[in-house]
Image (cartoon, rainbow, N blue to C red; front, side, top):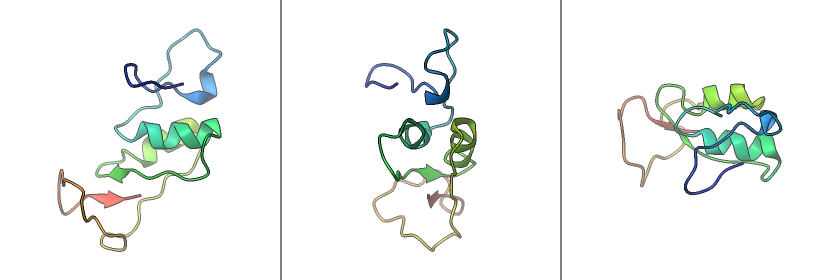
Length: 85
């Protein structure tokens, strides 16, 4: 459902001939959970890039309260909005 050279496909529709994206910059985090390859995954969320792909893949995306999880080592896009989820 994914490779280093192709966009992430939505695992719910792998048998469908139509290309359906998992969507968002953290789509791989949602797709790997939906596919069953992992029990948990992590991504960064500024404007829904964890939560929206999770919804489209049929799993749960979590955006914690700002500051509850360290952002150490993450390059901020919008520092006051970025969270790890």
